[in-house]
Image (cartoon, rainbow, N blue to C red; front, top):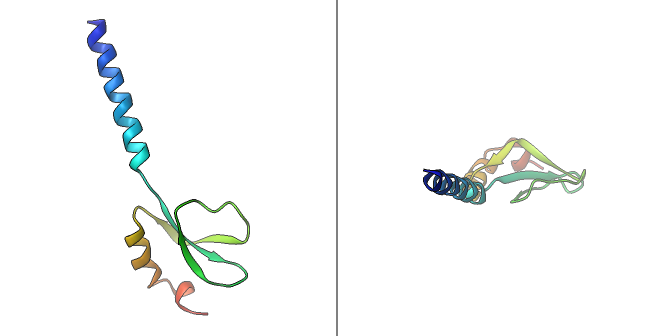
Length: 76
């Protein structure tokens, strides 16, 4: 019985780690000095860039599509 519980716990842990590793977030950020938007795969930690609106996406394709419609990213 203990063996089954240990195997089950290990399987659950492996699944949780795999889901965390595959969960990617992509951000649309705007540079404060150049006023240009870019797509990055790490959350910005500097004060020179900020995440635009709801600029967090699951895939790069979603971010690219959304960036085309964001007013702050399409105007200079």
